[in-house]
Image (cartoon, rainbow, N blue to C red):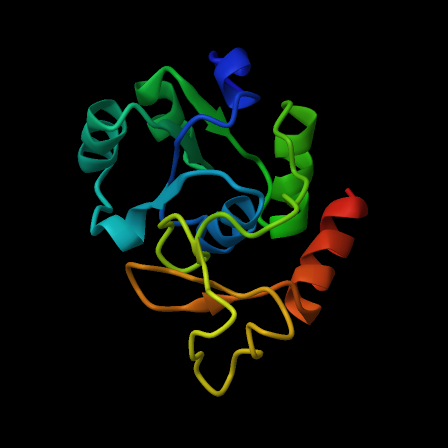
Length: 158
């Protein structure tokens, strides 16, 4: 880990490099504002550094050179997402699921609760029977189902 330990644990906005796509989903489920390099259309280190600076995001990377150039970053050593999560927990990141989904796991937008009378796609539960959230940007629907439970179990085992 590099500088900025206080910020790391504060849940400030993050920028994950191209090697950390699966980690981005986990962190979004934990409520973090996570920009993922490939979603943002940036791969080159200079572009990542510029984006992090313009949006005041902390870079999370496995790339030693990028971490060194960023100065303020989180350098992860592990390849497996569970081990990456363990490294972040050790660094002070809160890796618990909030009581309700807050961010879209696909595009990172803030979620909105679906009214009990609003229609949902066939793959989503009836919002009159179970709480459902919708992403206003990409249209994905989320609820606390088996995937939520699987992620909660993974995070508990850290």
